[in-house]
Length: 195
Ligand code: 5GP
Image (cartoon, rainbow, N blue to C red; front, side, top):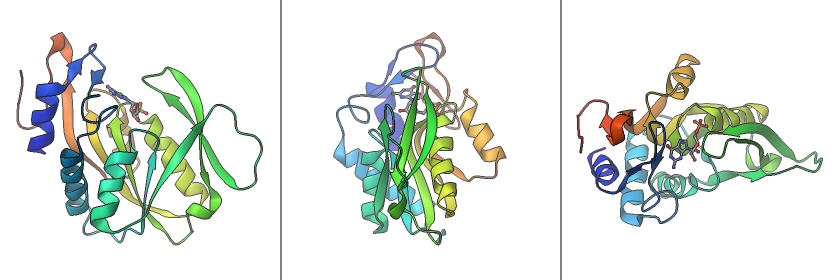
């Protein structure tokens, strides 16, 4: 997605060979126009799937997921992160190891948010090692619902998540795939926009 890649080039900060900071439009400040375009792009890419609901994870997945939900006229549920979950019979829970925070967190969704006959589109801001997406996948599977695929804003193609999740048979649509952040340079897969 051209507008997204241009934004990454102009505002993204390469923090290391593995971490990209995009807090001027995605992870802290939000660019609503760009988010709207991202929502439309997800809607277009998944227009062939009989999706009934979008599931994401707080906090940075919420903006792109909401814009996709608006475009697709579907409800959006976000999994909540909690330090320790008190025992509850009304929650689906999964443990997610955070790549950026280097710690494990339980994520949860209230059982009444997903029905067995739902077809779910998962959305998240980044795909790195695939832990967040796997956690969301686990929650939806606990509910017995189907997964149409995953929409990712930025996939870091040099980390293992994308390959693992595609190998597991899940359709992944990433709007920008970064092949390398080496030497402070952002290199995209396909069109080679560099700076
Ligand atoms: P994964 O679970 O796939 O290893 O990592 C995905 C999650 O970690 C995303 O939800 C995102 O919040 C965070 N993340 C992973 N890599 C990056 C990165 O390079 N930059 C930022 N800002 N977040 C990242």
